Structures are given as C-alpha cells and as structure tokens.
Image (cartoon, rainbow, N blue to C red; front, side, top):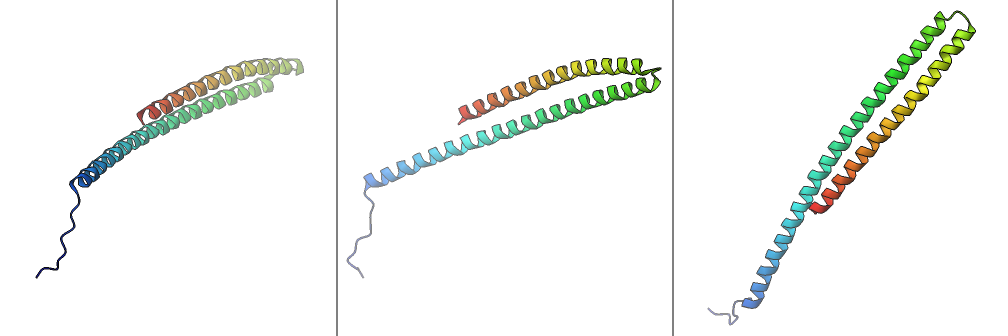
Length: 132
C-alpha cells in the first residue's frame, strides 16, 4: 500500500557539503586536541622544571642557613674563650665582616639562580605557545 509520500532525499550537493564540513570540523578538532595535548605536556614539563628549580633553591637556602649557623656557633665559641672585651669585639667585628661578605655572595647566587629559572620558564612558555 502506497502512502503517496516519497522518501526524503538529501540533494547530492548538500550531502557533499555536509560531508566536507564534518571532515573539516573533525580535522580542526583533531588539530585542537593535538595542540592541547602538546600544551599540557609542555605545561607538565614546565611544572616539573619549576618544581626542580624550587628544590634547588630550597637546597641552597638550607645550605646557606647551615653555613650561617655554623659561623654563629664559631663566634659563640670564640667569645666564650675570649680573654677580655677587646678580644670579644675583635671576634664580633670579624664575624660581621665575614657574614656581610657571605650574605652578598648568597644573595648574588640566589639572584642568578632565580634569573636562570625565569629565563628557562620564559623559554618553555614561548616553546609551548609555538606548539599551539
């Protein structure tokens, strides 16, 4: 029994256009996913690099603290063994001079490490941006 209605047919031109559009959308999406994956990998690398830089900075800070505390103990030992106030003042003066030099060296070293870390991070961000 016929209903008198013909089945709906999509014109060939419209079907071709739809197929091409879907294929282009799929390619664009695949490209987007690929770029996003690269960015995530790069961000993970940047995060790992930042973590390692933070660990290095922490190690340096701990080493400096240890050195500074050892110097303070050395001063305390010298003060205890001093014969008079003049000798105490001499040890104190030498300690202060040495600590100021050590502080300058430590600050310079930490500044250079921070600059190196920032330069690396900027390079990784630039690299990640190019991957997109």
